[in-house]
Amino acid sequence: MKISEIIHVIEDFAPLPLQESYDNAGLITGSPSEEATGGLFTLDVTEAVVDEAISLGYNLIIAHHPLIFKPLKRLTGKDEMERSVIKAIRNNIAVYAAHTNLDNVAGGVNSMICARLGLKKARILQPVSGGLRKVVVFVPVSHADTVRAAMFAAGAGTIGNYDSCSFNLVGKGTFRPLADSTPFVGTAGELHSESEIRIETVCPAYILNRVVNRMIEAHPYEEVAWDAYPLANDNPLTGSGMIAEFPEPLGEMEFLELVKKTFSASCVKYSPITGRKIRKVALCGGSGNFLIGNAMAAQADAFLTGELKYHDFFLADKKILLVEAGHYETEQFTKELLVQIVKEKFTTFATRISSIQTNPVNYL
Image (cartoon, rainbow, N blue to C red; front, side):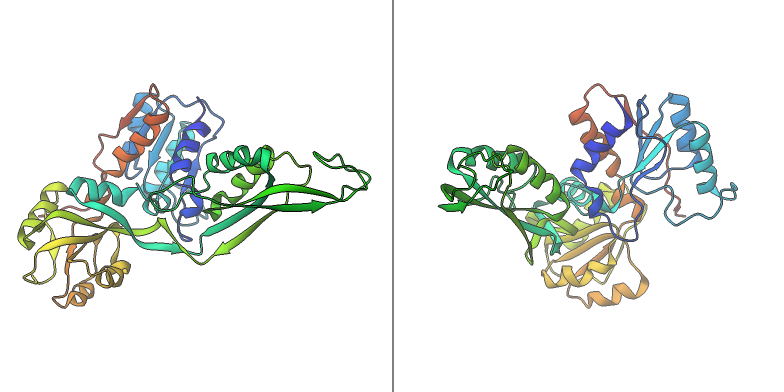
């Protein structure tokens, strides 16, 4: 199979439009038209990881962190990143990154953290606003089921834990086919009235074109009457961080020990003990200090992330337990998630999780 097919599966799960504006997710080196010989999965791309791919005979590295994050003006091999880029290109190795797009999707990085900790009822902590579209189309009664099914198959109609959601209203449509038309119903030059169904459904803005194209393909009319409206509603399936609950509350020290063990963290930093039990936990893999306010507003008992600044700990004010477990530590399960996404579609494709420890942080 081609590298583009592997990429398509990943981006179907974590679409690139969901990445943050500062990010550089996607294919970074290599050609998508090349046949994929195998995929090596890693959190970071280093020279050692590229060497590992070469030794395995794999021409695709799939990482969480982009190899190239900031714009490059030259490639001289002056640092680890540039040497890794040069080596990947020389050895015809494609490097792909699924970064904040994988962070910002339900079922992504933060869902993995919830699962590992045993948290239940997980939902997005800071949902994306304004990212939904309402799609309306008018269809003859005879083809309503077909058009509706095509829209659902394209990804429309999901609201929270429900799919195939739509509203349908029967009415009368009128139109007069003009001279150059080839009408499905009606006669050129004559006003026609047809029983139609108004179908309303919703979809994320980034798949609107796909939904509309599938809708038009399934529609019998030569000219399809449809509308798309921007919605102010939050999209509960995309956004930053997650909040979830333990089935039974834990003591604060018990929770901290669980975090340390789950992430194999050399140390865990935390704000002053509050004296409360921990049931509701907000979290964000990697650098999530921007979500402290959201966690407190959601009345979380604890907020777990990979990195916090010194002054962030003062924000706890004994109202919440803030916990820093390490950037690499909180995102390490991303490798297993990406393998799972690919293997569910391509069961025989050669995959391997890198044996290279890429965490640059050490503890004494």
